[in-house]
Length: 458
Image (cartoon, rainbow, N blue to C red; front, top):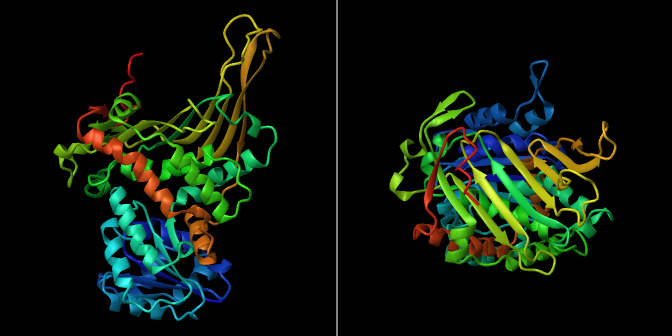
């Protein structure tokens, strides 16, 4: 079996930073090898694209390219053309030279405004039986757009051939949530509002938005991170135990969580959300200009670089537990983790300060897991001290994007979102965006290199 991968937008940032490096370890895992076809309107040929692929994926040993990379590069083909032109798509699919039933992945590594035109163009192409279509986030700009794109894709392919990918779901720590919860008797009985006080899902970055400012100004932190990545993490934290880890069972439980998230109204948006953007400051000793001054940014759009949203999952298990989702750019430190904070003990039997709350922390990058507990002190055996049981998780091989690509080739949809998940995500986020546009929550500011907007009193 030979697999084909057609990358639309093959010279873009997503391809260079994630897709091509992710292929480095995928190639030897594909029986019969992988044939890569790049498509874009750039003035390249086969040799030019081969050089680009080699630059991004080559691992060197004694100065020589890795044999797996060499094998991949030898099968690279370049197709010059308009990605929304049916003839360009026909040429690219034919260039893969795979059998009709063999896996052929069409990866839309494109600006989201091109997704629908490409899908419409595919309707005029004779598609092979083994075709899978991969769509990157953001999946639409709003609920109506997501519904329209889902409908167009549904007319083209069955749901199990559509991959709305989210590489966060391929991270080792995220996958370990399933094992922690559903393979350990000691933890799952505590996983409810009876014992859990709150959950934080955080993705803070020191990187600023300057290099991607023109794109980011059409998106913002809420659309770029919360609507997809962080809501996907929420589903893994809050889902009910599935009957198995088969794709359909996991997808059903994830959708149940999203449908149970309370729809925000203006009152809850004012109380439970914050938005802000950074002004000039310094990050790691490097001066950073204000976001509003970046090329391609329209300051009047008031696009946020920091979004904080507290959501409530109205189920028997999670009633009343706040789930705080937060993401920001140009902050003082990178913090990418899920924090489960447990309730205080029901009775204090030790004198002095109250025991600190137990916490389970799952760090996403690097992958670590830690459990914070109270124990008797060394000096005074009847005083309390906090200890941290910490472990570093093995690095993934291949990388999250490599895992994702391998899953698509194998037809495994567990690392992607179903149609209902994408739509429910917008059902949750769109009212917040509308309320922000109406001025319900003021746009705050924070200096680049700080911890974000100043904490509210009370």
